[in-house]
Image (cartoon, rainbow, N blue to C red; front, side, top):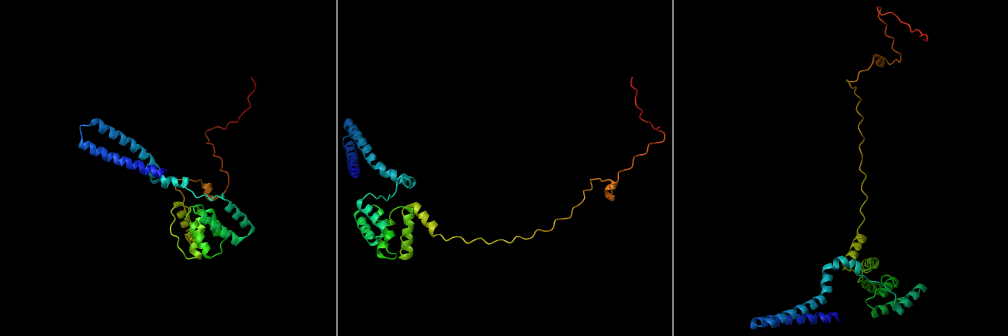
Length: 236
C-alpha cells in the first residue's frame, strides 16, 4: 500500500508542478490561479516526501543502524517446524530433512527450516549444499560461518562476500591463519660493572686508613694552665 501511495503522490506532484509551470508561462497575469497551483503542489510534495522518507532514511542511516534493527530471527512458530524439532530430538534424520525441505519451500524467508536441514543432512550431499546456500542468505553470524565452511571445504564452492558487514568481519577472523610464534631474541650478557672510584672531596681520618678501631688519645693540657678539680659545693 505504501508503494502505491508513493508512486501516486509522486506522479501527481510532478504533473501538477509541470501544469503550474506551463500555466504561469501561458497566463502570467492570473496570480490567484498560479498561487493556488503552487500551494497544491507544495501539499502534494509534502505527501510524496512522507512516502519516500523511509527509503531515504534507510539509504542514509542504514549502514549505521542496520546492525541494531535488521535481523533474521529463527522463529519456530509454524506447526511443521515444531513437529520437525520433535522428530529431530528423536533422531529421525531422513524425515527431518524431508520436512525441512518442505518447510523451506513453503516459507523461504524464515531461516529455521534451512538451519535444521543443514545440520541434519548427510555430509557432502546435495541437500547439504542447498541448505547451506540458503542459510548463507541470512545474517546470523554463527550459522553463516558454518555454512561458509561447509560450502568451501566439503563442496568446493565459494559463496562470496556477505551483504552484512558483521558476517564478513567474522568470516575474515575465522579464515585468517594464526600468526607464528615470535622468535626468542638472544639477550647479550651485561658487561662487568666498572670499578668504584674514590671521591677526592671526602676526607678520612688516619685511623680509617690503618683499619684499627683504637680510640684517639686525649689532647694534653698546656703547662701554663693549672689543673682544676671539681669540688662539691656546700649547701648555703
